[in-house]
Picture 1 (cartoon, rainbow, N blue to C red):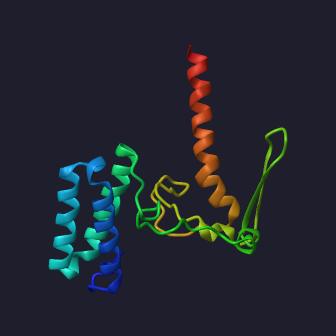
Picture 2: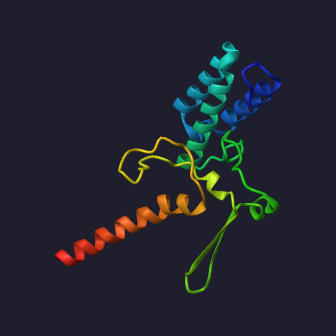
Picture 3: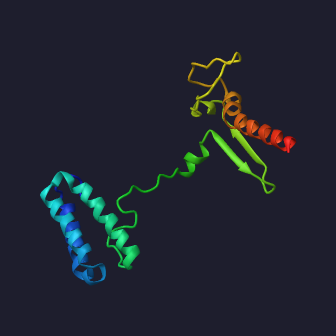
Length: 166
């Protein structure tokens, strides 16, 4: 629908909503009709809030589609952006490639600088137990070991200890 500037898009979508109300008033009920009309009225009164009312109307109409089975004239994503997807070239350029064979064995290949993408540093400790102050990994092995591998190893050791004590 509209940006918050009273654009022509608001007027076009207002006409669509009014047609929807006129066509489906009986199915959606008087309360819903009055609510949609109120949203349109407020959008016309406050151009700076048209984007808000646009989202509200689309959400309301999607809800009525689910409840009453009356199809909304707006797209199904209800004003949300389309999902972001990588192109095939971007996927192949990813510095971390993972494959899984038929037996479930995972193979991960990391380019030399892939560790720079791993930015979780919470809880890092020096050999003496003091907290590390730096904000980076020195290489792929350190990043992988400190993150995924160490967490899995800690949980595995806990399971072994629990099994032994049973």
